[in-house]
Length: 371
Image (cartoon, rainbow, N blue to C red; front, side, top):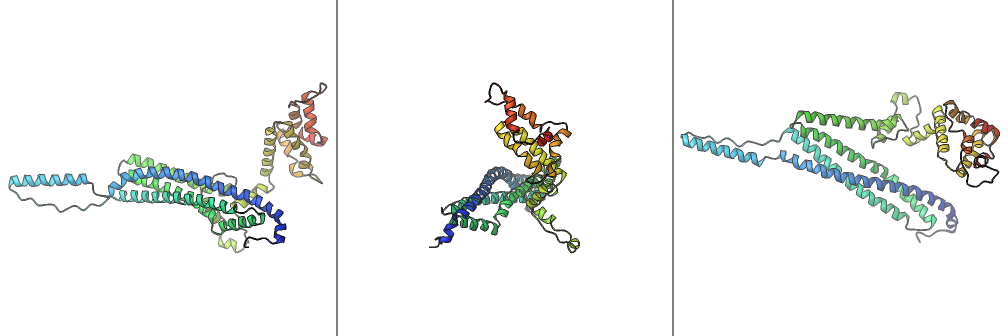
C-alpha cells in the first residue's frame, strides 16, 4: 500500500507525534490568521467597490456626448433656419462637431476603473485563499497515524513555501492599498474642473495619505520593535540588505530577514535589553495578585541572580532599578506582607503567614537586594 508503514516507521510514532502536535499548532495558527485577514479584506473590498461604482456611474458620463447638449444644438440650428427663411437669407448648415472628452475626465475614469479592477481582483484572490486554506487543513487531517500525518504536514507546508503562498498573502493587501491610492488620485482629477478649492483639499489629503503610508513602510526598517508595517516593508527591508558593491567587495555580509534581525536585537546584551527585562519583571510583580502565583516567582529569583553555578552579573542592577528611580514595585517583602490569606491560625495574622509563604526558600542576600 502507498500509505503503509514499515515496522521501524511505526516504532517512531512517538517522535512523529511530537512533530505533528507542534506542526498542527503552527499550521492552524498560520491558516486561521490568513482566513481572518481575508475575511476583513473581503468586507472592505466589497464596501469600497460599491462606493467606487457609485463614483464611476457619474464620471463615465463625461466620456460620451451628452444627449441634452445635442438636443439643444439641434433646436438652436432649427431656430436659425427658421429665422433665415423668414428673412429670405441663406442658411449654411454648420459641420457636425466632433466630441472629445476632456483630459481630466480621461485620467479620472482610467484611474477609477483601474482601482475597481484591483479591488475586485483583491476580493477574488482573497476568496480563493480562503478556499486554499480550508483545503490545506482538510488534507492534513485525512489520516490519523502520526507518521502519515507528519509527512503530510511537511509535504503540504513546504509546498506552501515552494509556491510562495506567503508572498501571495502579502500581495492581497498591497492590491487593496494600491486601489485606494488610485481612487484618491482619480478623485483629484474628478474635482479639478469642478472647483479649485475642493481640488486643493483633495490634493492635501492625498499627500497626507501617501506620506503616512511611506512612513509606515520604512519605520520597521529603522526601528525593529515598531509594530507598524505595510506590504512594501518586506521589499524595502530586502533592498536595505544589499550594501554598495564597493563595500561588498571588501566585506562579507550575512543577510537576514526582519524577524531574524528583531530576534538578534532583542537578545543582544545592552542597557536597553536590561531595561526591558526590568519592565517585564516589574509588570510580572504587579500582575500577580495571588500568593500561589507569587510564590514560584519568588522561588525563581535565586536562579535569576546567581544562576546554577555562579553569579549572573547581567541582573545585578535589575532589582535596584526600582529603588534608583524612586519606585517600590519590586519590594517583594512588603508586597507579600500586604497580601491577605484565607487560612491562618489565631496566633498567625494573615499578613505574617503570607510573608512566610512567599519568601520561603529565598536566601537572605536576595531579600536584602530586593529591599
